[in-house]
Image 1 (cartoon, rainbow, N blue to C red):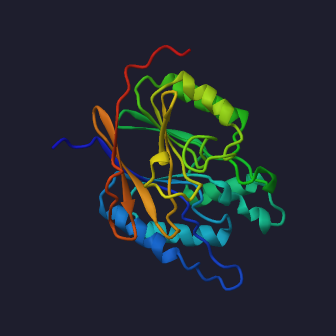
Image 2: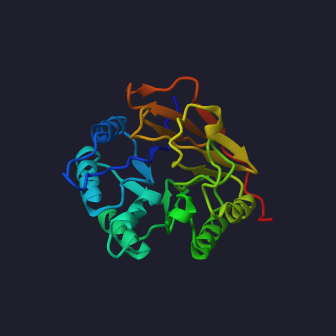
Length: 274
């Protein structure tokens, strides 16, 4: 059998949280710990935690990172979701900059959006940059981050590119109505560079449904599940020389979800940007 070049797992919406009044972990934390142990035992090269790692408070991060260090002795890449800004409801004073600093300090990352070259492939990690109730938890990207994405995709000739952002673009995967403020701007960028696999979370929808894997204008939109819910699932990804294979891991039963494996062939050589 052919050996994959890269094996990694994508999970989101863990929502590590500690109750303010008692400082006790919320009741779903054992499920999160079990999922991390299950994935680590499968031997991936790294994990991607694609937003909503915590509920944004210092005590939540302390719990999350303590468990991740204990259960997951391999590289982890993180993005920020809306819940990383939920200090909005408790911090005095609250600021977007303070929420980002807290995220970076605990995860050890240098930036909230960044790229990695892994085995010759480009991996792009994006993060929402603000939160207010008026946004209804939708993702929000600055013009600077959008320009960065355009540059990164323009400089990368090899396809596919693997990209991660917590909130789906509007009208892509399941339950993606009004989930991203810059959906139109992102679509304009992605149309210029076909061959991107765009992984999201946020909706808490099960992965094992047909509308969680959608191809539009040359981009594959891949919906995420929710590790802290009743059906804890993650996405398993294997990259071969000519294709990407997607599987779904069920962390309640510790097995693979049948009937939802997907094979995405590598695209043709990248055309000149339109």
